[in-house]
Image (cartoon, rainbow, N blue to C red; front, side, top):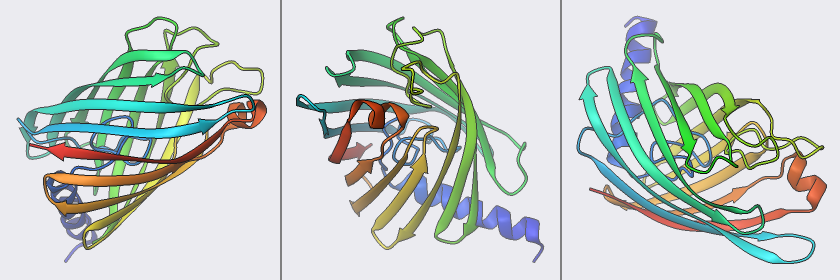
Length: 241
């Protein structure tokens, strides 16, 4: 069997496994902990998630919640479109905003893997919107890599950005890199990713194909280290119809 056929078979297995399970991603249903992947929900597939974690700051402890809903809009052998909403709230960074997100899987552009372009768009002009391109490649039957990057646009330079974090001077980064990996074992999936600012880790448990539980931890970027912010472990759940 040629290397191209092996790569295609691995990617197909990744796509089928990922679609069958509802996974954690604070930036959309088909992703890792923080970053999106190049896969999309199937047509008419609906995903609802809620996650929460506490944040320790020098003067107080606050919490961050993320409520998400998404659906697959089109489905083709090598393409797909996913649309959704996410409501991210945290009083420490002045965030109480609904974001729109969209991701289109591009057909046939990455041999041996999938490629998608999309964005997360803030409905509040004080916070950044993020545009990204991300690729996904299966490198073994139960392991996949994800990689890409993008830019933050339209927001207040001192506002919150979904990707890339802030520099030491408090200004949001204009561009960011995305990297991550996932490993599947039976009913568990372990994720690790870099959102252009910090590393995060997540563990997902799937009792069945329609429900999952999440445990995750977000790292610290320049802004978090400068301000003394630390993320505690977070938890949540997802249902898929």
